[in-house]
Length: 496
Ligand SMILES: NC(=O)C1=CN([C@@H]2O[C@H](COP(=O)(O)OP(=O)(O)OC[C@H]3O[C@@H](n4cnc5c(N)ncnc54)[C@H](OP(=O)(O)O)[C@@H]3O)[C@@H](O)[C@H]2O)[C@@H](O)CC1
Ligand SMILES: Nc1ncnc2c1ncn2[C@@H]1O[C@H](COP(=O)(O)OP(=O)(O)O)[C@@H](O)[C@H]1O
Ligand SMILES: [K+]
Image (cartoon, rainbow, N blue to C red):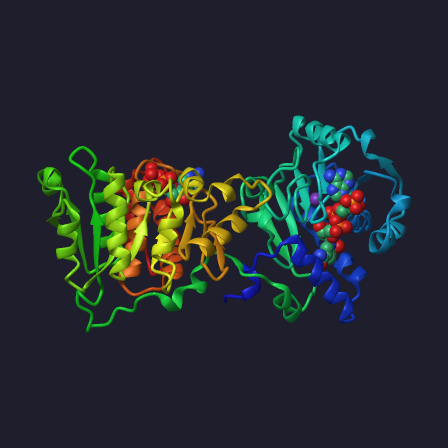
């Protein structure tokens, strides 16, 4: 069953407010820490039954507090432990001081930890409160643990990962698994944090759902439950025009493949009809490769104006292999002025690099009709200031860009983020690395176009397309080509 909390992504700041609110509502904050530490100990025993020793590394804040609870629980379970502290544990405060006080056993200085084969490291140095790059002593310990290739179980986050951005602050542990509490944080789903966190176990330490909901923002992990209701429904009354007509602009004679991939993907993803709009010099090449996709010549704005007299043509993909920057800008203006929906990708994005504001203005005064699908390089062309701001997480960058452009924004990568102008953001986590292949983005643009033309709202169309693209990539498997992604689309079982 879908539970809201399973998809929520909470920032460390959200978690801090939740913590505060939970304590204010009468929940014992030490009780939360006790459950957190017990959960870590249970995960350690379950995952590493053959450990010769658990080396519990405790930091100067509440993450360290969880570590002292875990050390005590492991000791009570009869496991061999050794506890090392960064900083003087006598200066711990609040719940962490209480947890330290309940632990009966020696605590050594972190600098004295000499990793040995057979150790399992419980990393309770820093979690949500990491506020700057790691100190040298901690970096030396991380290096020594990595050198011995010891398994690491991280508490809340691998130390060194910034929970808000997923970025590494100097150096970070690479964990086999991470036990976190209540919800995932951006650091668990954004790269490189996602790679370094290993398996993420989410443990419910008992903070009530209403407290979580009160402070939750608009970020979620991309799952079908979030957009399934917006999917088009097929009935026996469906005919091809109900399923929508998608048009894809082709590049010139030597660059037609990308647009054909988008067009075919659009057809497989459910558009009732797909037309490729081709320059006349590329008609023969395109015709030689197309069967179910229709073909129409289009060389100028006049041709486009004539085409746009057909009101059923509502949705367009422009960019894959397109090539002509001036034409791209003119065509986009026509499409915007006639109220069309547009997926703007690749060259279509690059065409506006000198004046991104002119693009945003075209789509500013309406419901969201524009979907932008940049990878990082293309993103920097439209939003140079956001790309340069290293303080922003990928989620925050996408949110700001979506708000500025009034577009559904798909910021691609292994951790694709889909954002809406109203602040909603989804982080995708089902993509396989095999999707990093030439033409893969063109396929995605076609799927989004197909979803749009079937009537889905832009944000949901984009999010579901990214998810299907990921599933198709998984189904096609190792060594896939972009054609294989297209073919795998029709083999997918019901979405979600
Ligand atoms: N939220 C919840 O519901 C629950 C949360 N729980 C747990 O609490 C954890 C968050 O605890 P937290 O806020 O105390 O932060 P934490 O990660 O221990 O670090 C803060 C300390 O580190 C210090 N410090 C920071 N950066 C540093 C650096 N680079 N180098 C050196 N020092 C640095 C910082 O010092 P300061 O910046 O103030 O100088 C401060 O002393 C969370 O991850 C989870 O495990 C559970 O108990 C269950 C309930
Ligand atoms: N390492 C990766 N793991 C998963 N998906 C990836 C990875 N790298 C890229 N992708 C996905 O593959 C697609 C590549 O698109 P793009 O960069 O436009 O490439 P192209 O222009 O060759 O089609 C995007 O959907 C992106 O999210
Ligand atoms: K940690």
